[in-house]
Image 1 (cartoon, one colour):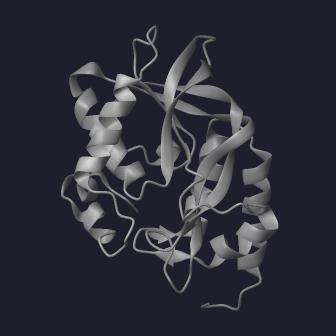
Image 2 (cartoon, one colour; image 1 turned 135 degrees about the vertical axis):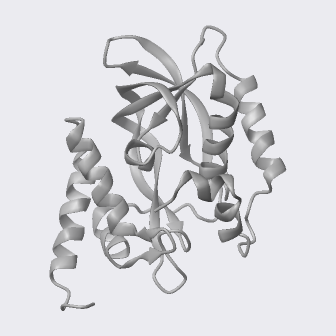
Image 3 (cartoon, helix red, strand yellow; image 1 turned 45 degrees about the horizontal axis):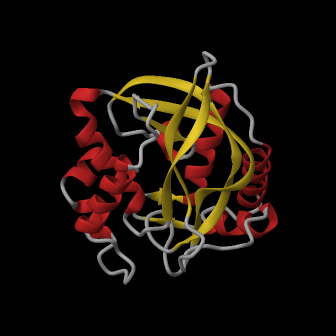
Length: 223
């Protein structure tokens, strides 16, 4: 599983160095600076919309964590993955957000004293291959407050993007994929458990977890 130390030490970036679409540290930092510069004028705090592994393995230090809802976007395993939790032999899928529907997740409010350090960690983690597009999106927090948060949505103009993210297409890939940071199925099951812990429901994730579990249960022992 990915750790903060792996990112801080440079080990995480080194893991991707063989890929032709690897973003340089300079490009990652430029993306971060451009995103912060475009922060909506009325937004004071910086929230990160955590809808995937940031829910169950945030790594960052935060001042507040609340259940939050984002309208206009939905979860989708729409990014090809050949490294991390997949390989060339067993490619998997990464989670992203695509337009349409809504997403129940959590929002993490960063603390001012450590904000620069935490944002840099998040950007290295999410933007290593440029597979995502960081956006300021309006969210509704559990306490009823509305604010803007940074969400990493699918970048549809990159090679990793896959149009077909249906359960029937994605489940066999997730059931088989594994890499340096664990299996693709583990990622899915941890997300499913994190949603359940927050008393949140996503029919796509629920259906996908059920189908992957079914596929895994049919495998011969030791496979």
